[in-house]
Image (cartoon, rainbow, N blue to C red; front, side, top):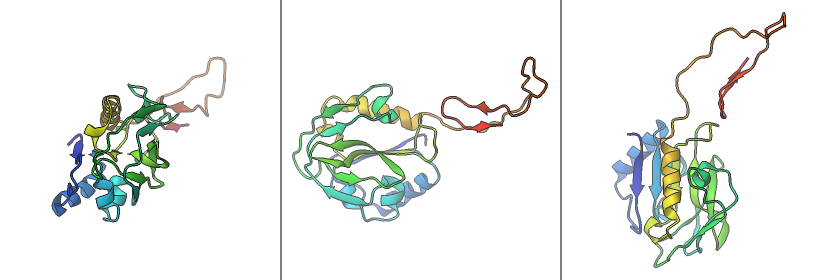
Length: 200
Protein backbone atom coordinates (compact mmCIF):
# COMPACT_ATOMS: atom_id res chain seq x y z
CA UNK A 1 0.00 0.00 0.00
CA UNK A 2 1.14 3.56 -0.67
CA UNK A 3 -0.72 4.81 2.40
CA UNK A 4 -2.87 3.23 5.13
CA UNK A 5 -5.40 5.45 6.88
CA UNK A 6 -6.82 4.50 10.26
CA UNK A 7 -9.83 6.80 10.81
CA UNK A 8 -11.36 6.46 14.26
CA UNK A 9 -13.40 9.70 14.58
CA UNK A 10 -15.18 9.49 17.99
CA UNK A 11 -14.99 5.71 18.20
CA UNK A 12 -13.73 4.75 21.63
CA UNK A 13 -12.92 1.16 20.62
CA UNK A 14 -11.42 1.91 17.22
CA UNK A 15 -8.52 -0.49 17.40
CA UNK A 16 -9.97 -3.42 19.32
CA UNK A 17 -8.83 -5.93 16.67
CA UNK A 18 -5.42 -7.28 17.74
CA UNK A 19 -4.61 -8.51 14.23
CA UNK A 20 -5.14 -5.04 12.75
CA UNK A 21 -3.04 -3.47 15.49
CA UNK A 22 -0.25 -5.97 14.90
CA UNK A 23 -0.49 -5.45 11.15
CA UNK A 24 -0.09 -1.68 11.55
CA UNK A 25 2.98 -2.19 13.73
CA UNK A 26 4.55 -4.47 11.13
CA UNK A 27 3.65 -2.09 8.30
CA UNK A 28 5.29 0.81 10.19
CA UNK A 29 8.40 -1.23 10.96
CA UNK A 30 8.71 -2.04 7.25
CA UNK A 31 8.62 1.68 6.40
CA UNK A 32 4.94 1.90 5.40
CA UNK A 33 3.16 5.23 5.41
CA UNK A 34 0.32 5.66 7.91
CA UNK A 35 -2.24 8.37 8.68
CA UNK A 36 -3.95 8.10 12.08
CA UNK A 37 -7.05 10.08 13.11
CA UNK A 38 -9.26 9.97 16.15
CA UNK A 39 -10.05 11.69 19.41
CA UNK A 40 -9.78 8.63 21.62
CA UNK A 41 -7.11 6.54 19.89
CA UNK A 42 -4.29 8.14 21.88
CA UNK A 43 -5.97 7.54 25.21
CA UNK A 44 -6.87 3.95 24.36
CA UNK A 45 -3.45 2.97 23.01
CA UNK A 46 -0.88 5.13 24.84
CA UNK A 47 0.31 2.13 26.88
CA UNK A 48 -0.20 -0.51 24.19
CA UNK A 49 3.28 -1.49 23.07
CA UNK A 50 4.72 -1.64 20.51
CA UNK A 51 1.82 0.20 18.81
CA UNK A 52 2.20 3.37 20.91
CA UNK A 53 5.88 3.93 20.21
CA UNK A 54 6.16 2.42 16.71
CA UNK A 55 2.94 3.74 15.14
CA UNK A 56 1.61 6.67 17.22
CA UNK A 57 5.06 7.84 18.38
CA UNK A 58 3.48 8.83 21.66
CA UNK A 59 3.21 6.87 24.89
CA UNK A 60 1.78 9.68 26.99
CA UNK A 61 -1.79 11.00 27.11
CA UNK A 62 -2.48 14.13 29.17
CA UNK A 63 -6.14 15.05 28.71
CA UNK A 64 -9.36 15.62 26.77
CA UNK A 65 -11.18 18.88 26.04
CA UNK A 66 -8.06 21.01 25.70
CA UNK A 67 -9.40 23.69 23.38
CA UNK A 68 -8.78 24.32 19.71
CA UNK A 69 -6.06 23.01 17.41
CA UNK A 70 -3.19 25.50 17.28
CA UNK A 71 -0.69 25.39 14.42
CA UNK A 72 2.17 27.55 15.59
CA UNK A 73 5.11 29.09 13.77
CA UNK A 74 6.62 25.95 12.30
CA UNK A 75 8.38 25.14 9.06
CA UNK A 76 7.13 21.55 8.94
CA UNK A 77 5.67 20.50 5.58
CA UNK A 78 2.44 19.31 7.22
CA UNK A 79 1.87 22.92 8.31
CA UNK A 80 3.21 24.69 5.24
CA UNK A 81 2.88 22.77 1.97
CA UNK A 82 0.98 23.20 -0.25
CA UNK A 83 -1.28 25.12 2.15
CA UNK A 84 0.30 27.44 4.69
CA UNK A 85 -1.68 26.99 7.91
CA UNK A 86 1.00 28.25 10.29
CA UNK A 87 -0.23 30.56 13.04
CA UNK A 88 -3.72 29.19 12.48
CA UNK A 89 -6.24 28.21 15.14
CA UNK A 90 -8.66 25.53 14.00
CA UNK A 91 -11.83 25.47 16.08
CA UNK A 92 -12.76 22.11 17.54
CA UNK A 93 -16.36 21.40 18.57
CA UNK A 94 -16.01 19.23 21.65
CA UNK A 95 -19.02 17.00 22.35
CA UNK A 96 -17.31 14.26 24.35
CA UNK A 97 -14.04 12.55 25.14
CA UNK A 98 -13.98 10.90 21.72
CA UNK A 99 -13.27 14.28 20.10
CA UNK A 100 -9.76 15.10 21.27
CA UNK A 101 -6.65 13.76 22.97
CA UNK A 102 -3.67 15.80 24.12
CA UNK A 103 -0.60 13.66 23.46
CA UNK A 104 3.14 14.02 24.07
CA UNK A 105 5.26 13.09 21.03
CA UNK A 106 8.26 10.85 21.55
CA UNK A 107 11.68 12.39 21.01
CA UNK A 108 11.87 10.84 17.52
CA UNK A 109 8.71 12.64 16.34
CA UNK A 110 7.67 16.26 15.80
CA UNK A 111 4.92 18.27 17.41
CA UNK A 112 3.33 19.99 14.38
CA UNK A 113 0.29 21.44 16.15
CA UNK A 114 -0.69 21.88 19.80
CA UNK A 115 -3.86 22.75 21.75
CA UNK A 116 -4.94 26.22 22.84
CA UNK A 117 -5.72 24.82 26.28
CA UNK A 118 -2.47 22.84 26.57
CA UNK A 119 0.28 24.31 24.43
CA UNK A 120 2.81 21.68 25.52
CA UNK A 121 0.84 18.77 24.10
CA UNK A 122 0.25 17.68 20.50
CA UNK A 123 -2.85 17.71 18.35
CA UNK A 124 -0.77 16.72 15.30
CA UNK A 125 2.29 14.47 15.49
CA UNK A 126 4.56 13.77 12.50
CA UNK A 127 7.23 11.12 12.22
CA UNK A 128 9.90 10.57 9.59
CA UNK A 129 12.69 8.04 9.41
CA UNK A 130 15.23 10.16 7.55
CA UNK A 131 16.42 13.79 7.37
CA UNK A 132 14.73 14.64 4.04
CA UNK A 133 11.87 16.97 5.13
CA UNK A 134 9.67 16.94 2.02
CA UNK A 135 8.09 13.57 2.79
CA UNK A 136 7.49 11.41 5.82
CA UNK A 137 6.14 8.16 7.23
CA UNK A 138 3.45 8.80 9.86
CA UNK A 139 1.01 11.58 10.76
CA UNK A 140 -1.28 11.35 13.79
CA UNK A 141 -4.27 13.70 14.12
CA UNK A 142 -5.10 13.26 17.80
CA UNK A 143 -8.63 14.55 17.27
CA UNK A 144 -11.90 13.70 15.58
CA UNK A 145 -11.39 15.20 12.12
CA UNK A 146 -15.12 15.85 11.62
CA UNK A 147 -15.22 18.00 14.78
CA UNK A 148 -12.57 20.40 13.50
CA UNK A 149 -13.22 23.63 11.59
CA UNK A 150 -12.90 24.08 7.81
CA UNK A 151 -9.14 24.70 7.95
CA UNK A 152 -8.83 20.96 8.66
CA UNK A 153 -9.13 20.38 4.90
CA UNK A 154 -5.87 22.24 4.21
CA UNK A 155 -4.16 20.40 7.05
CA UNK A 156 -5.34 17.03 5.76
CA UNK A 157 -4.21 17.81 2.20
CA UNK A 158 -0.77 18.77 3.51
CA UNK A 159 -0.50 15.61 5.59
CA UNK A 160 -1.52 13.25 2.80
CA UNK A 161 0.81 14.93 0.30
CA UNK A 162 3.69 14.73 2.80
CA UNK A 163 3.04 11.04 3.36
CA UNK A 164 2.88 10.28 -0.37
CA UNK A 165 5.92 12.31 -1.47
CA UNK A 166 8.85 10.02 -2.35
CA UNK A 167 12.04 10.93 -0.52
CA UNK A 168 14.80 8.53 -1.31
CA UNK A 169 15.51 6.27 -4.23
CA UNK A 170 18.21 3.91 -5.31
CA UNK A 171 20.80 6.00 -7.12
CA UNK A 172 24.51 6.64 -7.44
CA UNK A 173 26.64 9.61 -8.35
CA UNK A 174 29.56 9.18 -10.72
CA UNK A 175 31.51 11.22 -13.21
CA UNK A 176 34.29 13.77 -13.49
CA UNK A 177 34.29 17.39 -12.38
CA UNK A 178 36.68 19.76 -14.13
CA UNK A 179 37.46 23.20 -12.71
CA UNK A 180 38.35 25.72 -15.40
CA UNK A 181 41.92 26.95 -15.05
CA UNK A 182 42.76 24.58 -12.20
CA UNK A 183 45.27 21.75 -12.21
CA UNK A 184 43.76 20.00 -9.15
CA UNK A 185 40.19 18.86 -9.71
CA UNK A 186 39.81 16.95 -6.43
CA UNK A 187 37.69 17.70 -3.37
CA UNK A 188 34.47 18.67 -5.16
CA UNK A 189 31.31 18.24 -3.09
CA UNK A 190 28.24 17.07 -5.00
CA UNK A 191 24.98 17.58 -3.12
CA UNK A 192 21.41 16.50 -3.96
CA UNK A 193 19.19 19.56 -3.57
CA UNK A 194 17.01 20.09 -1.67
CA UNK A 195 18.02 18.51 1.62
CA UNK A 196 19.64 15.46 0.13
CA UNK A 197 22.91 13.71 0.94
CA UNK A 198 26.27 14.78 -0.40
CA UNK A 199 29.50 13.12 -1.42
CA UNK A 200 33.04 14.31 -2.18
